[in-house]
Amino acid sequence: MSQAANIYAQALLQTGHSWEDRVNSHLVALGNPKLQEFIKDPFTPKDKLLDILNTIQPLQKETRALFDILLKNKKLLLLPKIMQAYQHMIQTKNAIHSVTVTTTKKVDAHIQKGIEAFAKKQFPKQQKLAFSYQTNSKLIAGFTLKQNDIFVDCSILGQLQQLHETLLEHDT
Image (cartoon, rainbow, N blue to C red):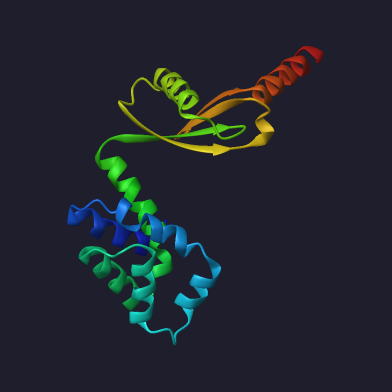
């Protein structure tokens, strides 16, 4: 994480406002290469950029002030990293532990509930868990959990790899 992103994130945290809902639509838009070019163009007027951002999602007073500062300092494209640092700070402050769940395909809410119940048993010392989901078709079936340096493999691929290692050990 960049030092600049951490400084801005710390400032956001100190405002006491919740920033995720205020900037989520803008985070998606900032992934657009054409918008990125427009932002990087030194001849693009700051007011024009603020108008575009306001069109994406109406800017509240505080959000407009944030974007104004980021534009003035040429740091608007740093917003995704700022928000990542901000979310990490919020989680640390609230003693929330991130768990990354990897599945073979997107899962519905019912299956997520089951996976999360399983994860809570795997990580009983962590009182609050925040789950993020990603997919990896190479797992074949099942899922994996990663929380800091702890990895729990409940996938078919993991079971096949474990079987392969066991067979190799018995071969020698």
